[in-house]
Length: 113
Length: 115
Image 1 (cartoon, rainbow over the protein chains, first blue to last red):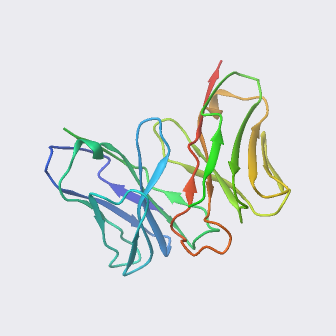
Image 2: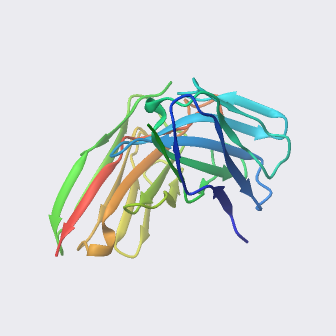
């Protein structure tokens, strides 16, 4: 099993550009999450999904959008990139909600200049 | 949302010394999870504690859940350079909450081990 796969690993964007961070998991997990982690800081939840067709905002959703058309995929969309969105983005999944461990992807390091 | 305070923020130790990080909550927790993130890596699940007063061990790591289920600790005995990284706790919303996605990570404790 590949687990949680994120692409790309690195990306540099200019201010105002848009991009989609891809995330896919092959564990048939219902729950998927997007976190951002700024240097030396903790993890902040951007969006999450409890199943296909259902998404909800986390702590820091502004500037981002998500969709969950399938169980496997949970892409994160940045429409108008801003320097404040420079961060490392982690996708994660879990089989259920509160009592399941998170399985993380390797992360996408995004720089907006 | 629930406030979880993780301390200390940083810890520098000599190899062979012990290390402890704490997560403290203002409200009762239904469970708590611990994760480790190596420098440049992604968080990796270590363990989950559910019961009041629960103690679990993984080799040199000892995890405890307080009797009141408001605090938890991760203790490493005789640290090694491989223990370097950031240790996070993760807690669900208040008991009975339904915001399954809004589990909260502590701020993390960054551990440095000097050889």
